[in-house]
Length: 215
Ligand SMILES: [Zn+2]
Image (cartoon, rainbow, N blue to C red; front, side):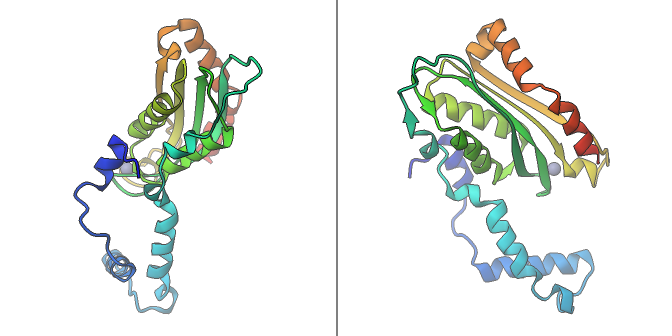
């Protein structure tokens, strides 16, 4: 498997993956740490359920982000303008507290001959999202991967997300939305393209989004 720089650092230092049994035992320990009794009827199957949930939350480690962008179309009937996906649902977990980051990603690129299936751009968000993340790193990984694999004239990524580590613990500020962006190529160098991206990405839905995050 082709390991990207980020991919390599994700696995470095991991000598052996724990067994399912060991993972379930760790969850039992956390239940006890929370102050409950893992032998209580309602909690008996919880370690197994949590471990299965972790398989979904973190399935991105087993997937190759470059591979899903390599199937491209070159026949684009002269299409030479921006492709923008707005409001791609984003679910991730913060690497500091392992609690959800929920939000939306907006991704634009200006092709240079190669067009990728739009569902694959959405899948890219899942691959990087379903890992332990910071929003800043996730934003950079999305932009850099598209830039490296598709070699477009430019790529822009904007993420707006709420971090449950801020809303349910710590400073407990509900409704705070973190916005991060990374622009490369024409979206960084050409003010007209930059403005075009921002106006396409920030629509009326942004207001709905803040309301939803507050609710
Ligand atoms: Zn956190």
